[in-house]
Structures are given as structure tokens and as C-alpha cells.
Image (tube, rainbow, N blue to C red; front, side):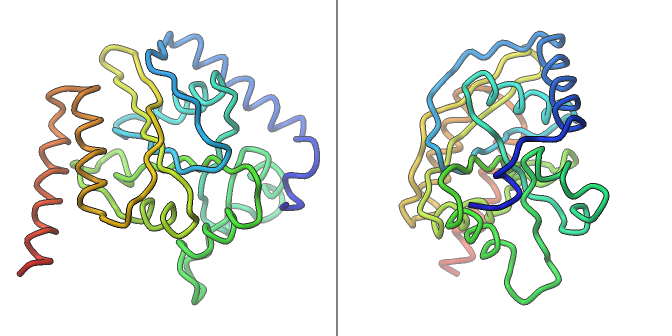
Length: 207
């Protein structure tokens, strides 16, 4: 176990988390799909279109008794923010070292009995819809399932779906995830972009 998570959280982190959970309740989101998440998993936060997404996924996981974790640039974990960042569920990732970030996060999974890592595969709010594949490699190499979670800010609803264990066939697993999200938020323009990007990757692999 990591030493950083073997002690009670600081007063500051408790206050910040309480404020964020208050905002979650205040905004009035409704969690309409609830599936229990494994103790160790990668949770997808999709689509990532608003700064409020972080508040939703924090609140949704809290409702289900999940303690969420997230990746953060290692420089954010320096004093005086060290304890606060770990208390909030941060996992420091150093992109300047030889080991890539996937290996670093896989190592974090190996050290912990409980780790629910929330990742936005689109990367940023400004994404047009294509996903980065890092989440998949992390889940596959760590031997943990992928849990698709979603939020629809237009209807103020969201949910957490059933876990999907990576099969090693990235294209097939991505097709299942895309079908999941299309069924929850039909007609979202990002799904067409994601499908086109996957078709492009498939074509390049067979080119």
C-alpha cells in the first residue's frame, strides 16, 4: 500500500471534498444507471464537455461508495500541495522519465488493493471526440476491467455501466464501448467522430 493513503485525510481535503459533493447535490444530477464497480478498475468519464464533469463523477462515485483516483502531473504533488493531492485521490505521473505513464500507473495498481482510476479518454473538453488509447493499455496491463461512466449535462442525468474486461482486441472492445455510449446519449456528435477515428485506425492497420 502507498504510504500516502495510509493516513486520515487533511482538514483541507475534507473541506474541499465536502464542498464539491455539496455542489453535486446542488446541481441536481440524477444517477439513473448504477452498477457496482470492482475494487480495482479504470472508470471512463465520457463525454468530457464541461468543467462540471469532475464534480459529477466525484459525486456519482461517492453515491456508489467508490473512492475515485486520478492521474496528475508529478510537479503538482510538490510541497505544499503534496498531502492535499494524495488526499484527493491523485496519482503522480512523471512524463519526463524513461518509463512511460502507462507503466507508472500499472505499477500503482500493483501496489494497491483498491484503486478506481477515473480517466477522460478524450483528454480535454475541447476534444472533437477521438479517444486516446492509454486507458485501454493501463487496464489491459494491470489486468483490471474498464467501467464506462457517462454524464448528459443537457438532461442532468448520468450513470455507471457494467465492467468490461479488456479482451486484447482493441477494435472490438472499442465497438462495445461506443455502442454503450450511443445507447445512453443518442445523437451526440462526438460518437460519429469517435467511430470515424476508429475506422481510420482500422484502415491504417490493414493498409
